[in-house]
Image (cartoon, rainbow, N blue to C red; front, side, top):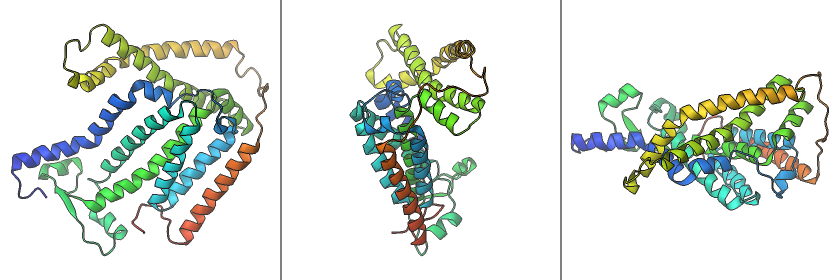
Length: 324
């Protein structure tokens, strides 16, 4: 498509499609998830669901099993894994709200992953993946789009290829967020200590885990302050997403300042508590394996067996492909 249309219209549609992959996810994040939603799905909140009682080592093993299964099997298994893991969010504290936020984030990730692949994949990669199929051209890009690495034609097979990669990303993302939502930083510290991971590496990872939700919290506070001071006053409601993006951009500097101040406070706190004063840490709470862990290890074994069986029966590939 595109050859018989007016050149001006072709350029307008092409640029609309160009910004679609970035614009739609950002619009959904700004208007639906917002910074508050990101805080809720990137920080620990205590709850009574079974996942809160599962050993952190088991959760890490589950995430690795999901990654292995999703990356080595046919794409729709990754889609089923994404759905199964997403339903587990309903068992968490405020599970329905977290589930909705997760769905929006996963959909945004799927759109971004698809659109970051579909326009760029060459026919030489698609031909082995779609044997004996006639490529269906959905859109023909203006010639200057090739400067950005675009292929001359956007094909249906290229879009399917991007979707297949996207479903593998969503499964891993959902399982990783599940670990963060149901595990305290103290439990993560104990877990890495048991695994003999160097304390310096463990401390760096924990700082990262604590910093991510803090970033969204500080951004949210800074953005709210800007609106309270009159940003966007009298402007049409339709401009709210753009004003939100502008406010987030202005909030970057104060957020960085507060994070740097917090880093100094964290360093003083670590020294005050005698961090690394001895080669080994003493433990007040011992991590143990319970009934929930044995159930989860059964799930982990099932996922690995599924990956092996899928590869032996022709439903496994290290690259996306169309099978059944």
